[in-house]
Length: 86
Image (cartoon, rainbow, N blue to C red; front, side, top):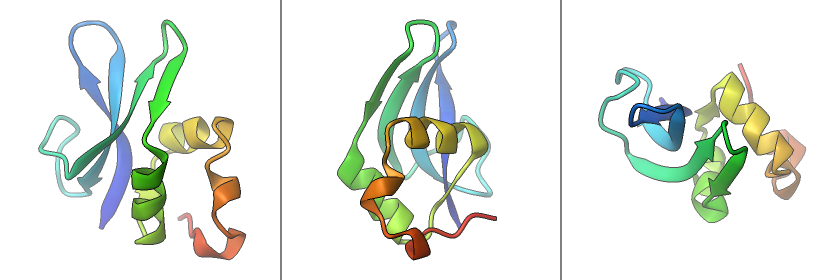
């Protein structure tokens, strides 16, 4: 199963949003980079087509990534019955 989760970059708390296999560790090899999140500067960059692709294929976002996507209103672009959260 694939998850959308945060992957830390560098010393400062800056994260990439990546699609990654569930069995991989947090800093493991990702399938694809789909975004960027900087909580200090409150900056977010999202590759919306890639995120929608992974969500349609059944990828599950982690709690924090789900909050970031909600704030960016990504879920409004999908039909409500297409997303299944556990």
